[in-house]
Amino acid sequence: MSIGASLVGFHTSIRPVIVVDGTFLKAKYLGTLFIAACKDGNNQIYPLAFGIGDSENDGSWEWFLQKLHDALGHIDDLFVISDRHGSIEKAVHKVFPHARHGVCTYHVGQNLKTKFKNPAIHKLFHDVAHAYHVSEFNFIFGQLEMIDPRAARYLMDIGVDRWARSYSTEKRYNIMTTGIVQSLNAVLKNARDLPVLQLVEELRNLLQEWFVTRQQQAMSMLTELTMWADGELHSRYNMSATYLVEPINSKECNVNYVGISAQVNLDTRSCTCRQFDLDHIPCAHAIAACSFYNISCYTLCSKYFTTKALLSSYSECIYPTGNEIDWVVPNHIRDKVVLPPKMRRPTGRPRKVRISSGGEGKHTSRCSRCG
Image (tube, rainbow, N blue to C red; front, side, top):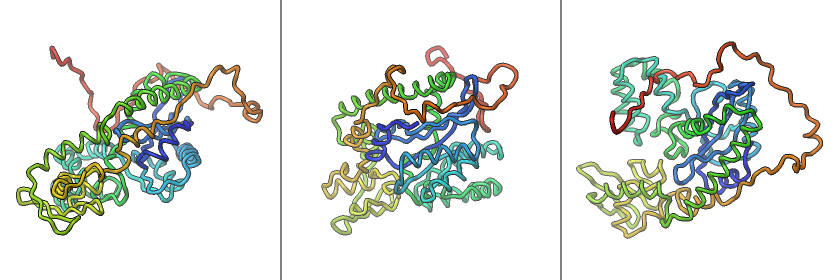
């Protein structure tokens, strides 16, 4: 299932980075809910498509991604992010041969915690995965390799360009994990207890509610950029106040700060620190250059982060399905006989809580007032 309003918004105003994942259903016939989601310009979850299958296997992932491909068509510079499930990797390469496939850095980090018990390498992995510059990556990765060569070899075998920001050859923007789908799973926690028809209606109702709320939110924004992007830009602007700019020509300059320099090119929207290139929001060096040349840094942000794009993302309406008695169903659909899945329910009480992945500990909630 993919709602037309989501597809229209994706094609016009959403970054071409799709996160896919599956989560278990808890109703009578169990099964798996497949989800494809993106992020809008305000860094909020933007659900794109849903599917229901028996389990996460080669056949069901290929079916779901093929349906997604049929709905989207060809997308230039498409980037797909998932966990390291082998079936997803096979299906992405088969169905989206021109897309880049990246892995979730959170899941890679959790696997590291399971396989290698040294806490020092867990911190180093987070830093090396999120480094912007190759030289920074090489320095931190060298430290990790000195502590545990086996962990370094494990990360190299995955493919550095699939998890390291600095080696990413395509536009991944700031999306490093499958967290948006995990958040959506949490929102759908109770809905996953429902039978299929009620579950699908709950999904449609959720999207209808989100589209209305976020359209109103976007209309109330008075800034050129979305609230999230404007906040990112302001935090970088505060950092740029003490930077020293040395002009090279009318669009290029060298920016110095405490002995560290970066070269900015406002024409190509790039900086040698690579934060500008990868996030598509001006870095502190580029903002200092904009101030020097009297250029608005807002014009150098990606179009996906503008309030106009956010409004466009939610411009279409999602309507209720109405009363079932009034539906006009084609005969070839009405005549289909849909049988329940061939499965045997396991003995005992149905599982309501997922099995924790490797490296996850028990989370204890504590009252913020009394402790």
